[in-house]
Length: 209
Length: 272
Image (cartoon, rainbow over all chains, first blue to last red; front, side, top):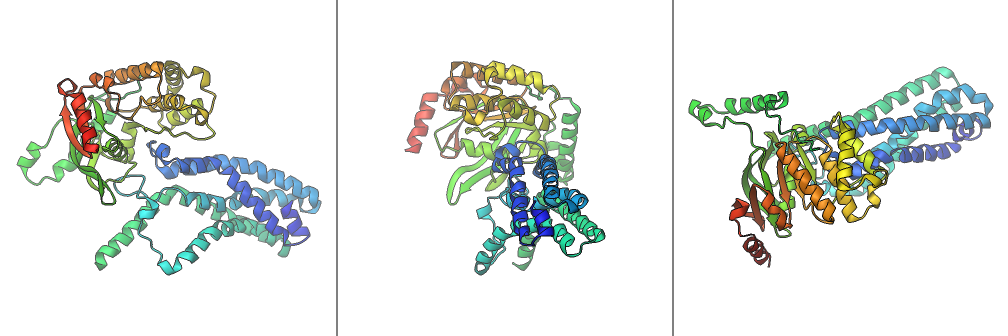
């Protein structure tokens, strides 16, 4: 409904749409949240954490398909003129909208593994890469980042309103799919990427010492 | 009943493990004599080298050299804060050692291979909020690739007396029932080494009997068992007793030779 009103009535309804996307995504990610909250259980399983986390997204994605289709059906009721576009946009939009909650959930996951254990060192024991004077900015960014990421999910709706041609909407959908793929890949490969980054900085410190 | 894998010393998995562990050892020794002196048998179930843990400046476990052979049944005793849980959590890769190294079945602690070999039952059972007992068992068994998990799960829940509660959420259980549910989760997956921290806490007579029977079956199948406990009556079942006090090993030997009362009394004195 938010999408239909954004296209046909006012762009301000995009805020309603954004909120709906964010909270639908957050609710659908409960299994991932529970997994992250129980690292003892996860690390007892002889499988990379990223693989388990990424597979929790499958159930969320399926649930969000139903949310997206329902949303498209409601949007068509509000504005029958957007019928085909609503169904084309709905699923990539809800998936991309859920990437904000994915990021905020993953930020609570254990940090990248150390060479000796998979759990890694506690977050508060890490050497911060951010200077103290930028800590406030870092906190604000951490709070806003998930919402900004979810906002990317609304892009096709605004493209539909202002560009109003199928090709532009199609390109925005391709971009959404690519964006979603990158976030899912990050969930899957977060540990090895984090380990590489940590090693890179440690090597840098060792070289400069 | 037991899902131990340790009774398959000649399996492809074990042979592959022996090969992979022996190659780096040989290549890292430049002297032929050193290679000849290297152990030729299978890797120890658990081996630690100078393994230590400090919390800030406070030592929780002093540097520890320990070798536990495959198939041993160990009781680990010590007062609260003696380092039992710290040692176990480091061995299962859930706690970062401050110093030293350790291996499980020849693999570095925390590695995928080590995690596949070790089953850990924590002193505080942890469950997913929205999964029933049966769903927990299915989830864990499937992620470990256990093919015949259903019969295994039925036998386990029946043995601990949870058959009527398999469709309930374990987060709503009492402490004793949670412990029973956690027991079934620890035993439903394959393992070569089992580390159990205070398993008797909260268990009723039936639960204790079931646990002892499960441990005996697993040991009979060749699994290596390490049970940290204050239940001294269970110590006689073990083949080796290790006592910790203030992060140090104060006894390592046969349970029959140990003066348990003196050890626990000494531990208490150390604590005070």
